[in-house]
Amino acid sequence: MKVNRIDMGYMKPIKSAPWRYISDIKSLDSLFRDENILFDVAVYQCNCEESEPHAIMYHQNDESNYQCVHCNNEIFYDANAICGETPWYSPIQTLFTDEILLGLLPTSTYDDVTQVTTFQMNIHIPCEYDLIRNKFYYRTKTLYEAIIAPKEPLVEKVYANFGLDKLYDPYDYLLYGEELPSQEVLINQCELLVQYKQSILRHLKRDTHFIEHTAIQQCKNINQAALFIAFTHLNEYEFVYWAQPHMLSLEKKWTILDALDFVANHRKEKSLKKAVYLHYKNSMLKEDKYDFRFVNAVAQRVQDVNIAIRMIKINQTHHFHGVDYVILNSYMTFLINRFTPKQVEKLFRDYAKNDLYWIEDTLTLFEGIRDVVGDLEKIPCNITDIHDMFMNALHTAGLKNTLSKITFTYGEKMLKACGKFDGFDIHLPQDGLELYAWGGILHNCLSTYYNRILNETSTIFGFFEDGKLKAAVEIKNNTIVQASSKYNQKLEKRDEERIIGWHKRHF
Image 1 (tube, helix red, strand yellow):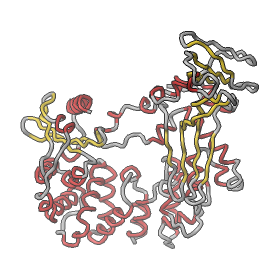
Image 2 (cartoon, helix red, strand yellow):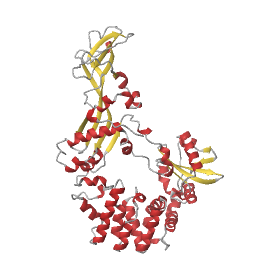
Image 3 (cartoon, helix red, strand yellow):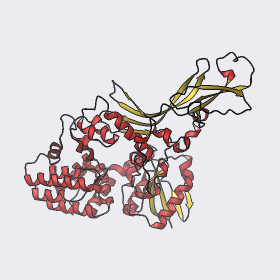
Image 4 (cartoon, helix red, strand yellow):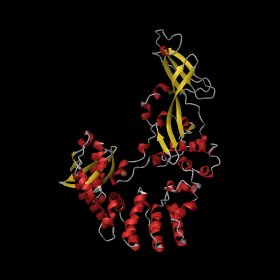
């Protein structure tokens, strides 16, 4: 769908929206305060340059009409209604015109103690009127907020309905454990919020603290600028394209070449350095962000330079999304200590060719058993045997004994979601051993989720058909986090439709 962009350059900044605020005269400080007079006072404040509050007294059963004597404006927003919470459930674009919304200017505050910078887009709403002084008192409603803290990514908060929930269908993501669009992604799909962020960026670039900062002056949006404010050790603009720049030491100033030397583990082989550099340039052309974790793990662990170069060229970007850096390095160490470098190379080529399940689930299992990996038996170096070895080790490393002592309890809402639905029998695991059994049937790490159930951060539902467990569904915050069948394989279309129907009914 084509969206017409709105140019902030053509929008005149505004001091306020044009408001109408109505008070019972008995509530105002006036000569009539103690009299039983059934009159209201309607106060109009236009947003033209010459305007000031204009009060009109009228009988409660009448209607007041007003036209600005300076600009002839007849459209005024109802401050009494907007001061409440109910109107804000409606899309903000239906509450105010583009002229008002895009005319707002950002404000910024800086906390000397926490070193936190906060930018806000606010609208000021009359909430009280002083009849004697002919003066409005305003309530500030924050629409959007951007917070930048040292060593932290930008935090964005939205306090009005910008229609972000209309920008995606959650069922396109949730059934297979794919991440929902982040709030940052959704915000960047909303034209109004994008314009607010650009307005904040212009405001930031004019700030005396950053006007001489070359990288910030090159930034194209507030997300990029926030990186250099939060991580002052990054010196070059190109770091905005790095997925994990925060992993670079805070003890020194970094250039891109310095960082690539770190990725290459400071190795001296020119051919390996060239391979790292070419991988970086290739990633910059193809990917949104440069993820160096796999390359760095190879450079640290694989000493044969030719094998290391070949492994660096393996396309692993999407296979390690969300993977913990420490776990990845530990797993690489385990492989190099147990198998030959050529076997490890072939293993990662197989990971790259196969479903994400194999590397993601294997690393999850490895995290649970890495303290006992030295006792594992010798097996062939392939994705299925390693996965199943970890699965067996997890089940024999005290997990079953732990689960045997656990009983789960559930709230009424979760219990009501059980029962029959469109051919499925839906159950909740009653104890740790039942969850353990489900993980064994589906050949995945489901049994490691017991803490999520105990802490009530997630709920696991089993979907049975003809008495056999066919799929498990994880619900978190009333949302499907993941749904999978045996070996985390993709659900059949019919099963997918039935699970969506069940979710819509109960959540």
